[in-house]
Length: 297
Image 1 (tube, one colour):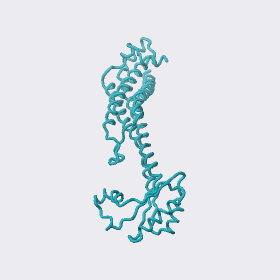
Image 2: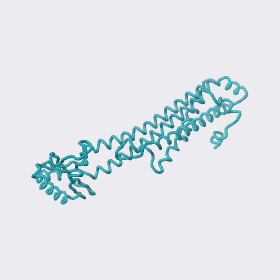
Image 3: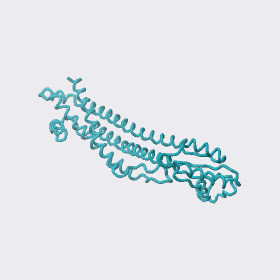
Image 4: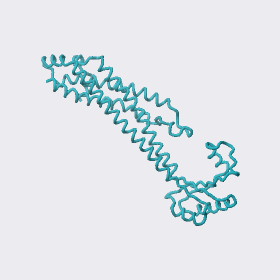
């Protein structure tokens, strides 16, 4: 408690040991602000990746597509036979054949609007929705192969898994980036603290001669650098949150490149960054001060 009180209130005489401005002050403020700014975006990326992984997994896990590759004269009959099999399959909640307009809308991004599907060998698509606890995909494939030769079941597992794994990997990358940012900030603040200690070596010797303890001297450096880191990180977080707020909102057209902002209460998460930055600065400066003062002894 006394250490916390000394950190917040400080000591006017001890504060004179550390120069209030100069290279070390500017370096600490800049590094803290820049790292906090980057940390906000890394946190937003990590949270957005987690949302994408969950959404893709939930949306695609319960969906499948049945494709009827059959001659035009057999397509209707095979479609009806496939729908009948799907309605009889345990674990299938709903099966619906897509209309011509719906299939044309699916192909429009590649071939443009107004596609004459009647003149093209386009297979009939059937939308399959899975129910709990799910259906036996392998058993369904075998039955369709025997009764509907032109039916091909695609349960999306082939390409769903890589998408979800990629989103999870991005979330992990965001977490690793936050850890690296914290480590880099700690290293830079350590260098700044060492520079300030070295620049004030003569002042430290004079303070020792008049009876000042190393803990008293170290306290001045720790307090000044901790408050600098807190101030710089707060400014960086404010700028980062403004940048995230100005990013485009989530949309189907933009896909993953939009919706990278925070949602609901998660806007409060970046507020944790300044105290964490101050803690990193406190630990880094304390270790640097003890080591440097031991070398100057």
